[in-house]
Image 1 (spheres, rainbow over the protein chains, first blue to last red):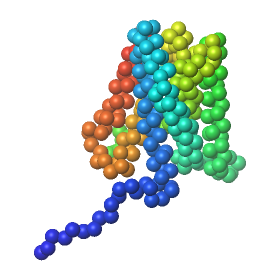
Image 2 (spheres, rainbow over the protein chains, first blue to last red):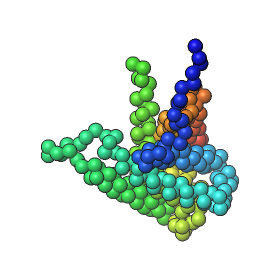
Image 3 (cartoon, one colour):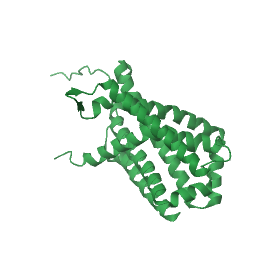
Image 4 (tube, helix red, strand yellow):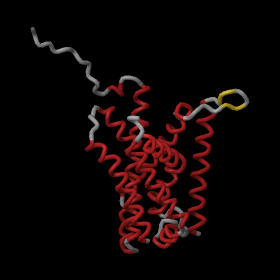
Length: 132
Length: 116
């Protein structure tokens, strides 16, 4: 009996083979940036709880060039996350039937993006009003 | 009932994904760019006084808590399941790296909010 070494096709870089897989991977990888931003906010909250001097130190770090560059990248990735989240929403949520017809995927994505635009505007306006 | 422990994680993933999709970009812009760079002029919300007042307000505190916790749980769940796609064998270590960090972050956020 010979020891055979069967051919196993490598799975390395499989997500680069088809655009569909590439989009899937891009969508999933946004989670890493969401985690980074969550931890940045957590650090800010911890510094806030330690008093004014600690918080001012954190703010000074946020003004640094690397932090600004990081947040520009975060902003772009979050915008992509918003787009991809609502792009796949027609597939991830249960079908909505209105007047005997299924809501079109494009409508669901469009409504989601409109809701995101409205909610984001609201957040910025509320922040501005509270600080005024 | 092998997957019965999956539902809460999946719900946290969904809730965090929705909140971050709705307002995540606005929050990044607010706390990471507009605040530090002073883009709002004299009405800058990202100052010690404004944020302490916001965190002490019950609604403001809940908002901060849910944003941080949900973002972390969303990311933990998604990263954990994507590790497999990168050819990483999932085990208790990776589980702790993902969900453990989210749980610890949630706890730290809660303690910090009560201290303010």
